[in-house]
Length: 113
Image 1 (tube, rainbow, N blue to C red):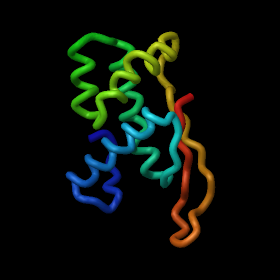
Image 2: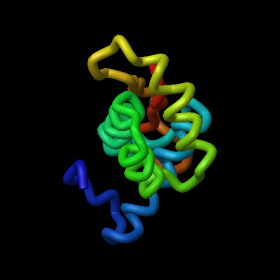
Image 3: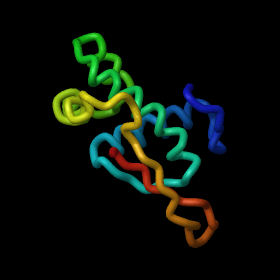
């Protein structure tokens, strides 16, 4: 795994959460979640975009093994990655938005730059 935060979940739950959040972020381009989840999702999304920039069937299959929707993997390789062809990293931005009502968890918006 990329980070060291356990996020209050078992390893299988944590992997499923990260896979789904990466898929949702690549599909929509932006999402709101807790700050620490956003910081865990960020390096995984960067890795997926790097795979998309490299191209090739093997990298497509690697991305597809992590991303949960085939159309999102297709979008990653044909729309998102070419947009960042001249950029060397830093494809995402995490912006803090304040505390959530109810449990006061620190919220953040993670988006593709």
